Amino acid sequence: MTTTPPPRHVARAEREAYGRSLRDVVRRIDHDVWTTGERDVLGRLKAAEEGRLPDVLPFRHGRMAMSPFAYLRGNASIMAPDLMALPHTGYFVQICGDAHLRNLGAYSAPDGKVVFDLNDFDETCRAPWEWDLKRLAISIVLVAREGHASEAVAKDAVMAMVRSWRETMHELAELPAVELARYSVHRFEVEGPVGRVLSKAEHIKPLQAREALCAPALPDGRHRFVAADPKLRRIPDEEAELVLGSLNEYRDTVGPSRQQVLDAYAPYDVAFKVAGTGSIGVHNYAVICAGNGPEDSLILQVKEALPSTYADHGWAVPAQHDGRRVAEGAHRMQTSVDPFIGWTTINNRPFYVRQLADHKAAIDPEDLRRSSLVEYSRVSGETFAKGHARTSDPAVLYGYAGDAEKLDRAIAKMATIAADQVTADHALLVAAIGRGEIVSADID
Image (cartoon, rainbow, N blue to C red; front, side, top):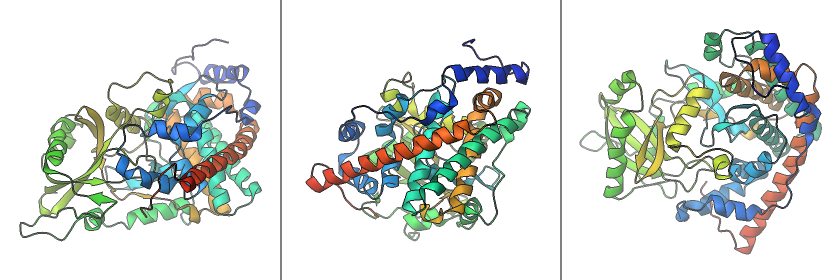
């Protein structure tokens, strides 16, 4: 087998043949394993939290302890070595790196249209496509169990996801490169779970983020953030000035047309904001900017970008700037990218910048039961296929996956085993909290 993939401009048949040859590296049926060896789960958790803000870490533990799926949302650093130990074909794509059902959702595209796509790239890097697909599959099983679905439904949902990924690769391999760059998710039921997420995002008021975070305007007409501990808090003036000053560097990382828009906004207030689950403990700021009068507000998120956990575990060369890595990962995988995504540096720490909650909405696991779970899993498979295809060769990936269900069945079996492991890991965290070894607090 040749070790170098053929270039994209050669005939599709040759590229598919290369993909089929990768079955000699790892047979499709051999993706059914989940082997971890000895694992220090709590040690991995503590190692991943080194250097984070200690006063908010109890909220991270509290969120992770809520359920096995909630635990998975925060365990990318714990699961990374397990994924890296699994067999893979050696064919690399841009991965999300923290694949799970809550890291897809709806948001506003640059033209104002609400779209559905991947929406989290904190762990993105170039790596085996299998890592995204397998972590996503594990999350499907955990969501199925949380919704009291049967193991048969969970298996069907995983197989629907992988099948959709395969079939989408077949379709994308036929598209001209410019059409692939424009491809967006389109196969979903309007009344189904994806349709409901899009509808939820469309009904978000333009000023909802400001209304949720800020007080009514003061006599100067400007709105300012109101402390709502522990989720939102005021910060010292010196820290706020550093954040505001960093936006000059950030401006240079977006295109000229977006620089022109940013120049119409004046940033004036900053607050620290707790975000997500896995990200709790990093420096994360909200910045409000006034545009065409004080009622025209733009709120930016300025979030610290830690190294990808896969780089931490020796997979890739650390990025020169992790904020840039995150922003460029979004550009590579998303069809419609936040027009204001960029990066900056504060106190020698890398950050990325984007709009905060611009018509952003995600699925609630409670909405995913039986047929809804299967449909959402299918659309998730299409979405990840699109992201992977944009950064590799879909003909190679389709050549490997093929038309048979061998890969679907193998990953479904793996996901069940791994979900049991995640559930056991979650129990270890809960027990450690009970012993007082890990401090937990409720933020919700």
